Length: 251
Ligand SMILES: C[S@@+](CC[C@H](N)C(=O)[O-])C[C@H]1O[C@@H](n2cnc3c(N)ncnc32)[C@H](O)[C@@H]1O
Image (cartoon, rainbow, N blue to C red; front, side):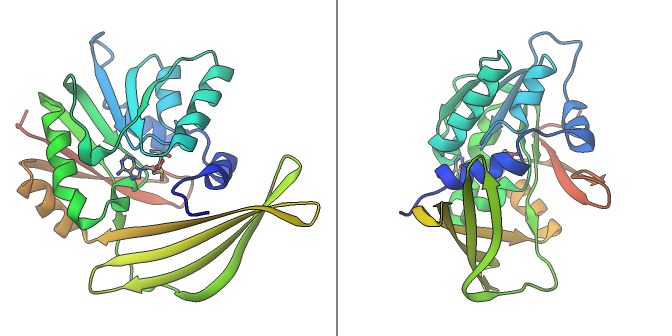
């Protein structure tokens, strides 16, 4: 019953986060050197290929990995429908040992905040080791906010029809201010003709950061050159997100 980005979570992710587009995609693609035919990109935590697949469609050589087999499977199926063959595998970022260096590594959509404190330094060291000397890491985190609405009891938060099924989402949310951890528990129920056919429970802790705090973590882990980008309307009009552009050497 307990899972992490399991089958139901992945089905829901696919309903509204299937393919990256617009300003977000443009921003990440702008770091690809189109004049270099050997340019190699890596997307750790690539999930369902939301970003990886449009990169492939743009002719970029990209590889990815993820801890969730269900998300990787969704990526493979989506790619197959588009006649693409993604280079993706099952792997954790904290154990990643790169067989070859990359020009660009990107971790979009705040995924890095999924890592607990004890995996952060190891993961950043692995990313640094996987970069060419003049390579770049683009990385996003989830920022601390002024107010968090906690939900101490299971609360239904969404109901989504997927083909002839309905997936109902329940949440519990607690903020641990001392650890800056937004601890969410998610419960997904697959309902068919009024019967609950499957239940998945997922612990979803998110480490929230201040920008300055995270910049200093990057520097402590060998990324001496850090530049912050503010991407306006990145996830659609009226939204914005920040991306850290990190390199080992200055250019
Ligand atoms: C929010 S999804 C993002 C997927 C994709 N990058 C995107 O932009 O839509 C986060 C992904 O990180 C993966 N993940 C979480 N912890 C991981 C770890 N330690 N190593 C590798 N992947 C991990 C999850 O399985 C999930 O697919």
